[in-house]
Length: 80
Image 1 (cartoon, one colour):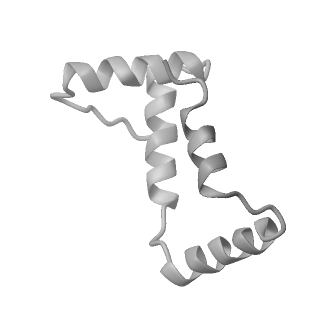
Image 2 (image 1 turned 180 degrees about the horizontal axis):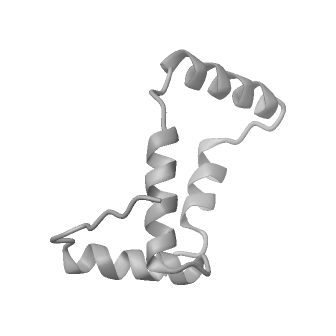
């Protein structure tokens, strides 16, 4: 198995990486490997696929209309 050394990681990036690793119950090294693997799997987003998904969601909510008053109330609920 290959070994890679990563140099000059900004302190704030390293701290975030440590936090994510801890939350995922992984070592920092394992978290870096997961990040690299995920980056290698990423693909270009097809705008038509995104639009099709949005249209499907919109059709699912057609029978649940919300007016401007209800929308604004929902936005502000729970805000200090």
